[in-house]
Length: 566
Image (tube, rainbow, N blue to C red):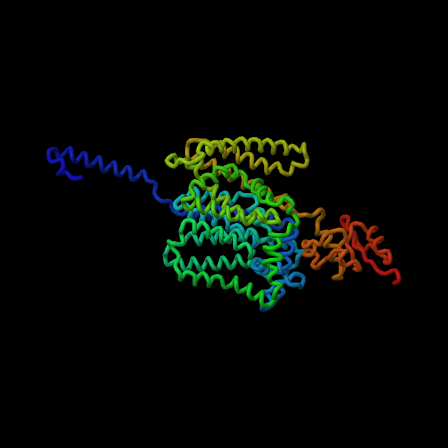
């Protein structure tokens, strides 16, 4: 527009031009500028997750079966030299259950710890520390994955990280000397690197990273790399993303990154022959797919129960979030959220052997699906209507009501009228206060107060997690009814390596603390040294021998049995 168009009245033309310019400027200011990556906020959330992870980490004994076995394999690796380090052993026999990727790292931590003994007061901390720290990486990595799926959506990015920070199973399983938390972090990094490809020169570095992360997964839980990869490849193929960035030369960088993982499995096969296949088949995918082992009575219901128990308070977002993700299946976020969830569910639900931590990979798609809805509760962007908006607006009321109920439960528990629930009172009070304030403030029409509401909700969960992890309540599912440390003290009272235990399955944690393998009595009935809670019964079982009680500790007795003829 120019003044010539208003040659009859130049002043009117100038005024009109200024008005148009002002209108254009105001419309530009209404457009929200692209958000910058919230790096500082993600680092802060990661720092909080580290604090939660190490809080009370070494206060409780290692548990059966996984922690006791992982710790022992790592300890034996510290005694190996040269190429022997590549071939893990358990009680001097080939260890064929899992690759030694995490065991090597724990072994390095043990080596750095001076005057090492399993009975040291800091032994549990040393064994659990590295797996725990690696597991915390899921918090920033999950947020970064969401950032790639919904670029410039700061609220969804931080909401996803906050959800991963406050999920109980992620916090609890991640702090154990197990492989599941580390694998979840590796899977998130794999997805992030694949999502970040954009036909730039950095793609070759990203594909090298994809190969190295895949190698780490092959060295953690090798068979699980297949569903982790399929959960990424299917959304990529669905959205035809390969067409935008894949180039043949990238396969070279991917192959270079895969060398450590495939190299170890090749070395393992060359040295242990057909026995190495047990890691993939007999004790890997084959066992969990076809053998109904211990803990699997409920079958597919186990991972469903784990989600229903561990997903609070975000589980309230879950139903509507799935519908929203399906409706957005033509967008990158919808394809990845739905595709990864379906693939991982297809891999986990049919397993014959079911244990609670087998469902651990599901938490990443859970957070990716629920994160944007939590962000939507804060932002309330009316320009983007979506299915279930009215339902979503009622969720803060639900959290408010639930928070009030939990607060009253905690108040009653704190009185001590019901002794069995008193230890949970402070945890319930923290959740109750956080959810009540969070729900109340999220209803507020002011965005600033809704942000405070989300903070209260997250802070309530974090306070409860801190109280839980600082107490002896966080370690359950032990499959035990007696503590191992007193029995281990009895076992170390004798220098004999031939010692057995009566009336129990072999317990790896007992072996760890006793620093010797204690087999079952029925497997070695002629052993002279016997740990038992029924000395008279054992003596009747071995009538030709005379048994003497050498020491007793907490209902357990160490017997020495010898032939009567002597």
